[in-house]
Length: 113
Image (tube, rainbow, N blue to C red; front, side, top):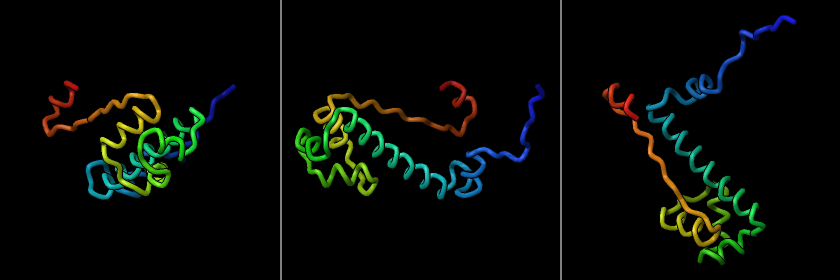
């Protein structure tokens, strides 16, 4: 059976570049930051639901309000790192790990990562 290739397909990265510009441009970085905040809210919501907790129960466990949990899950609020750590540690029983990706102007330093 011969495999056919659709030459009209484009990647999601291509569409992001076209819509918001290349990585490193102000508009694209703003989009990426918003997307990361959205992912964080979805992740917290999924973890909460996996544990069978309501927003109110999670808020009570970690000393915040249902409204604040809702705002985080719906990407309507910036969140302090200390609050995020408390929600994950006290509310969900987890441990927060952070990762920082760096892009250096020197291409040799990029290869060392």
